Image 1 (tube, rainbow, N blue to C red):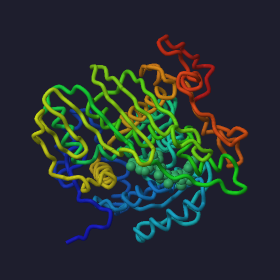
Image 2: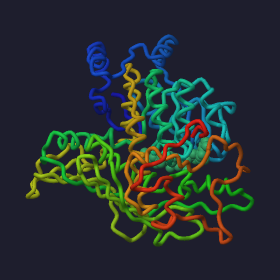
Image 3: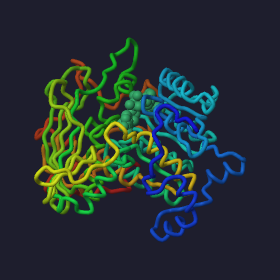
Image 4: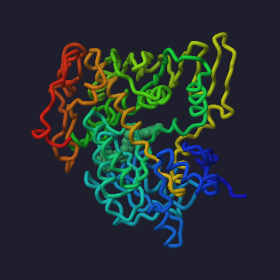
Length: 478
Ligand SMILES: NC(=O)c1ccc[n+]([C@@H]2O[C@H](COP(=O)([O-])OP(=O)(O)OC[C@H]3O[C@@H](n4cnc5c(N)ncnc54)[C@H](O)[C@@H]3O)[C@@H](O)[C@H]2O)c1
């Protein structure tokens, strides 16, 4: 019997509804059914074709952004069981991050990591060199501020993509990803986004039951990412301001988008998935209560937002980075006949009797591994997943929430997604000596949004009034 590798979870049915064996067995039937449903199915997909022509089953991957998640995702890609996956090129802004990642990948998959010195790239242009390498797929796992540029370039270069969430930090970035996602469809490229809950059985089964009406009409939902916060990395002697911000990317909006975007997107995406829609309105409050020092950049430490969907459904969202408080990373919904704890796969009637329980309990979910099992099985079966649209629109939902808490205004979706306010022209960055997009004041503190007061720095329209159309001819590409 084949032994499973560490970090590997059993192969579950893929998000497209069948497992690898079923795909192979039913290949032609699926192709016909898929074509009828409008799914893009390309049995002669280039990866499969070139791999077969070479007498191997190998998909070659490159990694851009060799931090914790990029390393984890590369290992998970190489763990997949539907065929061979090799890591052949790597790029990072910092040499030490690349070195650590290469070591960790090699420790996990000695026989599948083939990244010679001339395929190790460092700097802001590392992504261009990775994309110019002989790879079939790229994993994009830098901080999200770079994602629109990197994703667009990957699609232009004709590579399949696995990209981490969030996929942008501002509305121009979201629109750029939506556009590149469409181009990927035309070019026959697979696009996966690291919103792994979409690949977890407990979520998938609960959401199917809820959408089938097990608790009647859905009235309101609650989602939380309340925790203690994340790392800070001390300023090192001699480093430039840009280097400092890149190292502490979490605390700078042009790189991270604030924690409502960086983490809470997972929970907001579950609500969007459940509603099969995106909110039309948002209003909320937030601020910096305890994390106020020079080492905590620009971001808030708490946000609370009320989102409204087009059908009137209300979504209450909390995210907090404050220690010694109530912590929860969960999603709940309430209907006319009961309620659900979605991620735990448990649904109850109004009296609290359990009416549905997913067989797969918490702790066995393994979405990070499963999303790679699904992606590689799909590609090899000639099925092209394209998760760019929901990845981009759930990213926009979390940006929408941030714009609401920063401005203190009630906002509507159309104004927010059409906003031209870009947090940084990352395409122009060339070296760590470049000017940093935000600057500390004389006390070493960064500009912080003040709800109600400085909303014009946060949103580029006046809430309640129609937004003036910008002149696209005058505008630089976002
Ligand atoms: N899906 C999940 O559950 C999950 C979990 C953790 C992180 N993430 C996401 O993964 C991404 C990375 O997070 P992380 O925790 O790995 O952070 P990290 O700091 O560990 O890694 C980011 C890496 O990107 C590199 N980098 C930054 N800018 C770059 C550029 N322009 N070109 C090349 N490399 C660059 C950094 O030097 C660093 O090595 C984020 O978008 C984060 O939200 C997702």
